[in-house]
Figure 1 (spheres, rainbow, N blue to C red):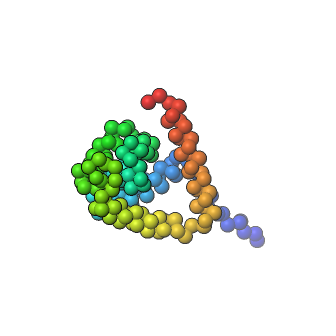
Figure 2 (cartoon, rainbow, N blue to C red; figure 1 turned 180 degrees about the horizontal axis):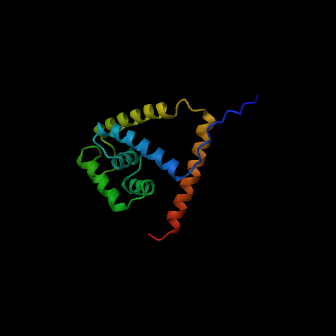
Figure 3 (cartoon, rainbow, N blue to C red; figure 1 turned 120 degrees about the vertical axis):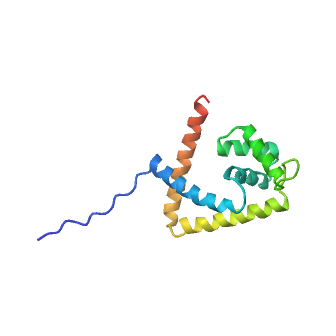
Length: 148
């Protein structure tokens, strides 16, 4: 009597659905981490841009590119961070309070990343990173080529 070979689950196909499901699951967890900071995700990205040493003009360009939003929306984000006391009056440098909030969120995200990705083999993480970088580059090219 012969037995059929054990079937193994098929590998997931990398497609928009798989990427979207992962994105939304991770975003939901990330947004929980942000609750304690009082920041929205968009505000956290703007705070990071300034904390990374960009002046207001550079921060607007960086955040516009990263979040795919308009410059006026980024100026509003920066103004909100100024009003909250997280950036200086010009929106060009992070205050002590802003640095503390950013560090807390950065630490929480690092811990989250370790829980989510830490035990995956390095080769799998590298392949996923390369694939997602290619998908991102292609999506950015689509956006650049299409009329707004």
